[in-house]
Image 1 (cartoon, helix red, strand yellow):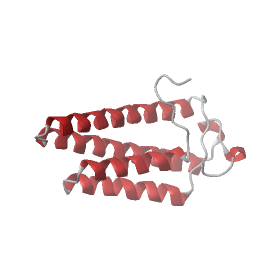
Image 2 (tube, one colour):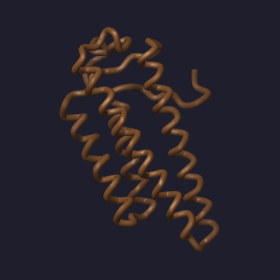
Image 3 (spheres, helix red, strand yellow):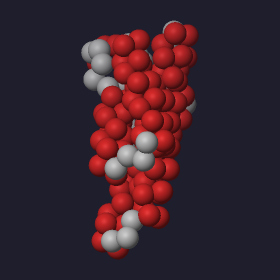
Image 4 (tube, one colour):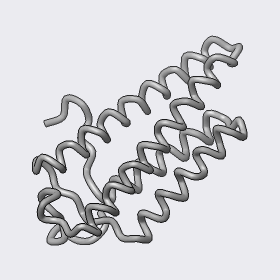
Length: 139
């Protein structure tokens, strides 16, 4: 995690305006990476000739869609005071923005599924430094 447990903020009302702004920017950019990655995998799936490879891409796309849903639920949970977050540093937010920019470039450059998945995983890992993302069904 970024910071210590004592740095954790219980809800948006306890955070400073700049902390909430950085959190929201990190959330939006992480979601953008997932959106771009999902879009790229959908395109790769359509052009894949090998059915086994097409099925693998479809499965990875579904996993990213689930991660995106989990991310959105985590954001809502923070704003409703149900979970904590560690305020992201400006440096961490910059790293997430850089990944977001790369994700758009990968979509334009027709990247491989492996490159897309690596970038999406990196973004989720960085966001996890800010807030734990519960999986659907976890309590």
